[in-house]
Length: 253
Image (cartoon, rainbow, N blue to C red):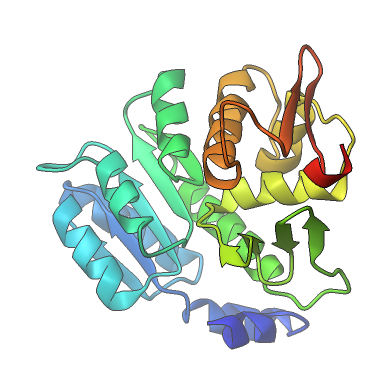
């Protein structure tokens, strides 16, 4: 998959369009009409390798079999809902997951992001917008694969590798979602500097930061659970009350 994405860089527009069909997209929804609508929208944008799945359990199995590059996942599914599907998939895959839902409450969006989702679109939705959000997620994943001049950043026992989009502690890889890694990488690039919640949100989500506090707090909490020895007494990600957060080297305190 990485070699495919490397080839996308520096190719002509026509070559890029031709290669878009190599991306495997899985769409999960229990309504056949919505599956067909999304497939058509994706086809129009050049994505033809689309797998349609109608249940959560089947989605988990299909993900293991085809290893999709991105998943469009409905929240309201029979037997197990989209949130549970996402949690199960995150046990073995870190591909971008875009939630679709008729639930428009902030708490539902936060839950979607907290369980490992990368984006959240509410119904009724524009099929074209969903297709373009898919493009944006794939582009970000592609850029993360570009060989860059940057090198791994070491903070105490923590190593952040921007080239491989990985982070490890004590030599052991941490299972981070795409958003968690982006937050950690941004903080590592600004080691010792306070970053406001607003800046974190706008830098990572590329959206206006209004009402972003809960979203950032959820992601910071999950990051601490994964990298801190004692999340209730963090040594790496420090809260600066009223200001934001900063990443510090505990060995230099």
